[in-house]
Length: 319
Image (cartoon, rainbow, N blue to C red; front, side):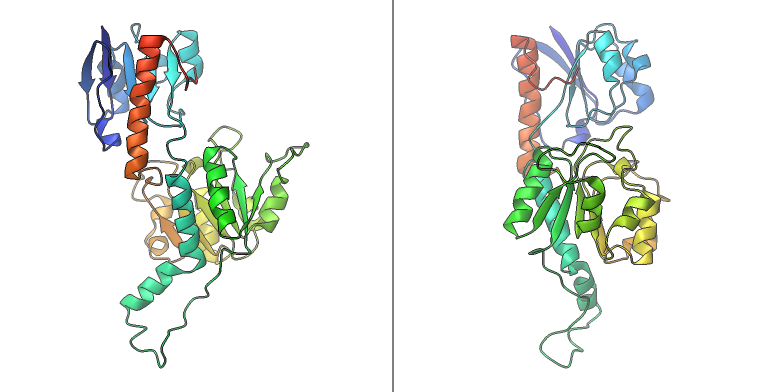
């Protein structure tokens, strides 16, 4: 009988059905890093989201044979250590191919059309005091005719591209930074920065992509460009992003992910002046969290377990 331990039940606010094989189930609302090894001591299957599974922790879990990550990102699991110990690791894929692109387009539309600024003006009574039928405030731009640079061409990047093109945007997929060979369908990274009216990030966080967008890259964007990050917080130098917003170089930024989650109150993007800035939209890592997407994630998670235990198949295996 399998012993399944679900470490972060509160991280997925939809019910999980139980897998169709004999098992014991133990669930915790949340688990601190120092509690992981103890809670998984007898587990054969671990369900995790962001709980860290380091090499040292995995070495203390001799019964563990499967880690089911209830997300796409697997940065929290030492995959090399899992391979060495024969522990299979699976993740979730494709479930957010509609919800994340829609979140990106919502941010783009809001920032291009300055909707937060207009909302704030209405709250101040600007329209009531207008001398004519409309009130002209911050400039409004169309997505139609604008150029969108995309970093990452997985299901999410391609989903954003489809929606952007339906609005009449020109889409450029960025080649890897510093690449000498440009693949068909890609544009040199520096050229994308120079041409983009908006830049959206959809690549994994690795040593090569950490702070991919830093001071130099932000400065290379044309004045008034918009940056959207629904990928990973570490892809962007957040101090540099805050400075680019304050300077007025950026036309706006939409951020759904931060380098530390939940963030400390003194995080550079939680500064009161930025949160009050209508050119800045911050959402709390919820681009993935539409109800249909969470339901699809929950079902795929259970299907991964059943295929692994009942059929010895690992369609979403990463280790």
